[in-house]
Image (cartoon, rainbow, N blue to C red):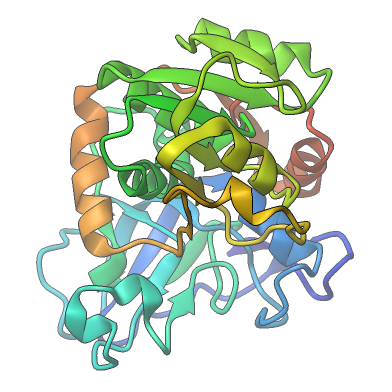
Length: 327
């Protein structure tokens, strides 16, 4: 099989040829159709996430076909289309797993981080963390749903019934979940990298009520703010924009340090919370909901061999929407 492999953080991925792996008990062998390029992949490749299994094949927004099943696997026919996300395995017996909070599992496996992922033609995955996907949809359109969509969905859920929402950082996750929120009848204000007029226009084209730089004041007080940009300095900014009792939800796995801010910005029962990973229930909910919505997915496709180029484009802010690798 072909793969793009991270051998040392901070260095480019290198192409490798490897034997196709055999699925073990409870696993599926997958032939990959598409794999999204997520900002978390950047954190892995750049060494900002430090528990990486090395060498590792990155990638966790995976659309694939089942090629074979290991022992003790039922319900997956050869050729069936499935998705494999970031959370790739949980222990099943820690207090978090036993209380329907498997996203906080004490002994998890993360696809493309602590286990090999989807920047390849094939991979093995825990069948318990593979989810059916529509047969008719384009693979490049489906791939961003497997993380940008799922994490966006969990982040939006954390905002509760908020009707006026600010979204800070308008990348892959934001461009999906902004549309979901708008279709639910909520009002969305987009906050983009200062000076990024293309991102602002992109947000407006998807139905945002306004779009401005993240250094600009909000046009109105917000019920909730969702932060997808990995910029800790946006936390006090977002807290200042939300109403009393409002929530600021940090949707990323990594963020630069949060600067100090006066307690008054948090007071009056404002909440600051983070999102960690996902649960299988999150995946079932969102992957059932997404095909019923008229979402406009914007995917930019790259060949597998162009993975470093895709990562550079994401790192440097040259993308609108999501990058997707096609083996």
